[in-house]
Image (cartoon, rainbow, N blue to C red; front, side, top):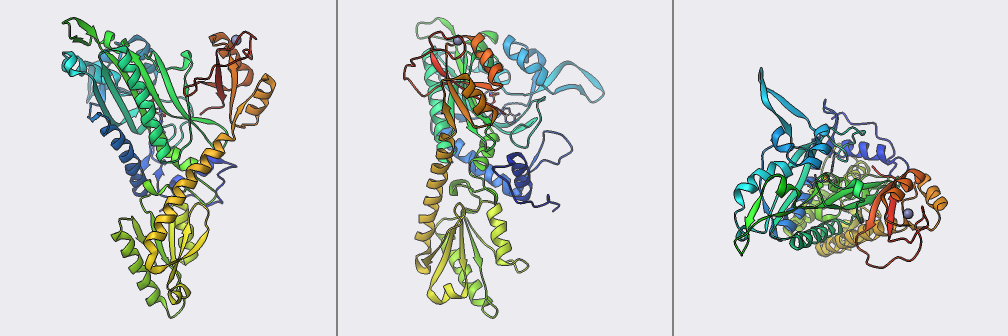
Length: 482
Ligand code: 5CA
Ligand code: ZN
């Protein structure tokens, strides 16, 4: 395959280039398709994608969500039904205008998201309180004519995968509880793959079009910029009213339903690679690694046969214990080349066997994250791999958490906020009175974006708004953002 020039990967110095090169060289996504903003999930990347989606599907399936599949095309008449929604999305839609040579009477949009796809069906499906709550989700591609620079996986025009959940409820309180459950589910997902995040309630001017409010997950990239990796929206009765979706209450009255929606895209997969990358490539948590253990012979002239056989036996033993194992017996590569190859691809555990190991009845186990080598009794290789896999998962999460926590600053002076953001130090928290005007003013002054209020703190703030000096109502997070 025609790869990119292999440069020493610079995770911390040039994260954009690091990410682009890793995607192609590790066989994850090839974004050289002749349409900007579309990409190809390659075999190895597709396996990572499938493992990540499995975690998300399990979380949703186990909490009363049902997977469905709705159409890709939206008649313009449907899209236009909710005013705020159409205003925000119509300029971002790809439009289908013709069927063959024939001009369509009503244009179709390729779904930029699916509230207006699902709503007309909910109107048919929901009759009474007995039909509620209804929690649906689908994993699809959505299309957005993004005007900002596209980035592979992170900002696509064909966004794939796009996991969107849509729920319907009989009351506002229930919808509110669903929002909380969705936040909990996403926390569990990101925790399980060791991606650190902050959860913020977006300011009014940055909420999802048609929502009452939006709660967002943001991670921090190595370049100090925040990346939105998931969002949960309380849609109130906005879509229910726009599409006239009502249900019969216990008392026999007709009421509009309440809805929520929440989504995670391929960015959730990118997040794992970004959070745990280093100069050698990606490092995958064992849970989502397509190959959890690679077994590499380090033969000595004349002893190839025995060493290869021992490797095959160890690989077989590990496979039988349920691990996803690759036995790398390629002749054309040196052991060093193989190490490099699998390190780039993030295989969390490597088992090496050389003649000396063989003589001593041991294997050498190497962790991808620290590259530390340790001998382990060959007869006991399964417990060795188990121990190391647990340690890798635990340490990846712990290190990523520490890295991010060190980059969240609480400051009391505007000048300090400004200088931290100027040097892309991370996320800055300041006090705010809550007025939109001060928010906009703050964004302009520090030349960064407001992520929102911390969603997970209940502590009352004591102090003054950094902009106007009036009593502050909350902490607000500011960061450079993708
Ligand atoms: N209907 C709602 C809930 S699914 C919705 O569309 N929300 S969203 O617009 O916020 O998108 C959900 C998530 O998709 C975002 O949090 C973001 O992480 C991701 N996303 C949005 N646009 C793109 C894009 N162009 N490329 C990759 N991921 C994207
Ligand atoms: Zn203020």
